[in-house]
Length: 228
Length: 228
Image (cartoon, rainbow over all chains, first blue to last red; front, side, top):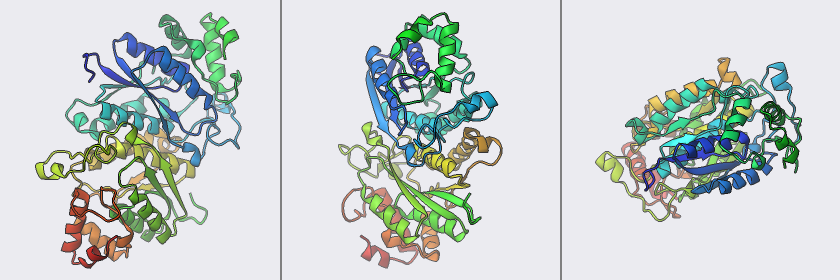
């Protein structure tokens, strides 16, 4: 709990549009926010620069960047540079090779550790289940189960005062997320969603494609021209 | 799944007696084992040397040591060197200050990531609920809930072919663990349980006290004389 009585929230901050929008929602709701980002051996380490820029933009209370090297065992085109990123998943209805085994479970677990240590009330997540590339760990039933686990994992949780997992965008389409980001004046140009690790977004990977389409639909194609 | 048809298991290997015994049980059951240990900023980093020695002893297929710096936010006497280790918890029935917020949740989550990447069938844990220092994340209901989460977290899990959390010692007293370790010829002297980070075990912290008492009761006090 923070000193000035506004609730304290940990935000998983990837550097992407969704988590930046989730932070904007938490701040609009009057929360103080501590950001948490991960250097997990991702090919698009560029996103950490975006995470820092967003943390600065929001003047977050703290921003932690934690190393957890999931590339030690690969298993994904995002953590194994020998694989190339492809978008077969969304097109064919299978889980694409950008899926990183256990990534959300690891990130949420570390977020819960930080939240418990800081006595935060919430862990806010940009996860959404609609345009989610078919990942199994972005679905509502997964998050509901994680909430039950979080309630048992700590003393406060067992006393009914545990950390609440908060995924305000879980039922949003990407279009709705873009619209919400615009309403909240999120600096979309500071965010980074591309899976490829180049200096400019590729515009081709699932993440670019879904994002760009939504920005177009929302009538903000100008953002695309100026993107980094 | 391993090539020679014996099941493949990931073992969380702390360097302590319990996880070494759990590995012994997995090997006796015919499993191939990959070890996973964590450098999480613990004061007793000495335990990682023990983990390596045990991995060598068992000739494990692989042994990964992953950095995940939970000491960045402290919250425990094990990760915050400004706090001293005390054993008030067990004596007074409260959670002691050696409890590390979210530690088991983080470790199991990372173990699930490795297991999924390696297509392992099991994740074996030395967790036990009897002489467990009062930690909330060492209890059977916590593990049962984590199993449900693991089942939803991966594609294989959703198809009923997910990773099984295996805690063979969950209902063992420390005395029973020592007896099992002796039966399995676990090299108890290679293991390290002390919470303090010195070259020799302190004999005073909860972990030493519970272990030493069990070794005494099992009639193997000679081990105590030769411990490192």
